[in-house]
Length: 181
View (cartoon, rainbow, N blue to C red):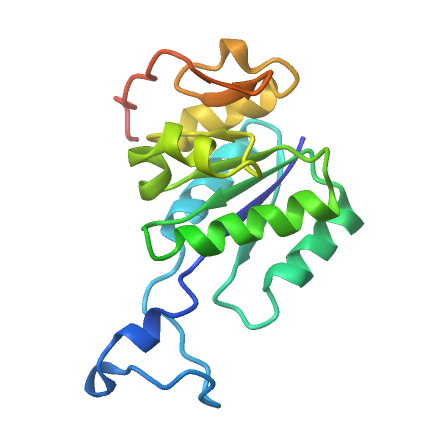
């Protein structure tokens, strides 16, 4: 299976900071980059690859990796699924917008949401956003390969929140990963 892993950042993050901490005015000519890499998808990518799947990563911090370009890549490369990771309430609107752009470009591509906000609000995310097909709450290291292996029938995927016939289905919680080595 081919998976697109997308990390969505809050486009207005630097506008929220005071100028003395690096904030800038909207439309400023300089490119601002958050001071941390997308650790979540960087950890998930090799784990998913170890399970035999192909992974392409996108970080929306990069100026060339915005919604239109990513949606275009989905159409060009036809991944089997798209996973969108986002951290907080401030990045949730952008994550919904990304999911919408992808779903409109490729309606049959399943989209799974993940990250801190999606974990804390998994049922609400599915009820609020029709563009997401499922949410992977908690740790994705075991859930995401299981999800990809059972993409056509997610009933057996432990720890998944998904839609079946318009209704939100919550499978039993997945235990935390015990062996971190």
